[in-house]
Image (cartoon, rainbow, N blue to C red; front, top):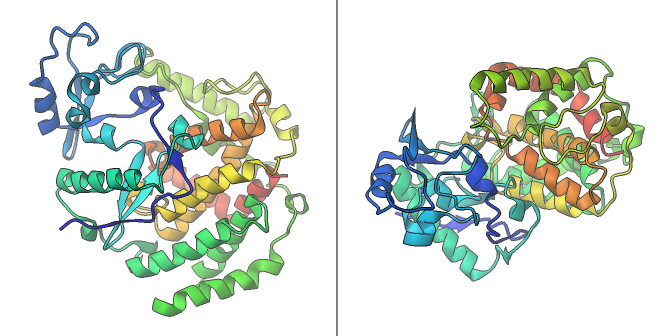
Length: 418
């Protein structure tokens, strides 16, 4: 039985603007059935499609293949006009399901699906297109949810209950109650966005120590904790001490090096060359001195020292940031399978860690208007959040956990918001 769509990202607009970004960066995983269906099409003599192989083996569960890419980086079916040749000739139904679903994510939440979005899509980050709240958008998402249930062979209620801490389950209704309170905090415009997220961190810190309340009392308990921490959260970020100049900032920059990376030439460079480039760039970020490596197309020629000295995050960026965190929270994209099976509290902290990443990267684009710089920084960061396998590695998670347990997460949030 199909389950309903809930929590549409009503704050969000989106339509495809044929930029081709997803066709260059998305790992297009393909099932055996999809591969056979595409190979059965009349494609061999199409001048806009290169000769095969059109697929590469990956052997990842049900997805045994991925779409091959051209040497310049685009999918083999991407035309010079940034159009999918499969869709041009045969309609969207023949495309692999992961391509049809992007930039949406449908996340099972017990008796319904939640809708998330990938902000690595420029049109999502820029809030461009049709309102997600309109009837046609909802119909499209309901249709996709039916396809998803058929595609993966299970419904929303097959998802196990989430963990609030390792080994400690939380029911789906209680997860909804918890997230509703966090969304309320994130949308409270009496504060700048960075203070709202510091409030969320304070709530997490108290609840980690023990939260035995469940059911209908959970919302009241969380609201009481929210009220209790309010006087203790400094209003101005400049009043917080800076992150530790040695270990705190070092850990932040090591993690930043992962989120900042965005190369399109992955098929041109050999595996060894790519690995050497990553080591070199990672070392530069760890040192935090001299010229910032051009690890993505958006960065200006700038030095680490200049990024640290730039100040003044204008209030107009808060609307963009609020939209990003509201969608991520409401969709449950920050815990469970969408974020490497993290428990809820760990996942929430990892989501908030993206704020100083976004602000640092936007500071490294001084030639861009502030809102546009933040949108581009969100694209870069969200390209990795929940999707870059490196962020799920134990040693990377250990670095993140160390930064948080030392109390430096609140400090880097405030430091890059000052």
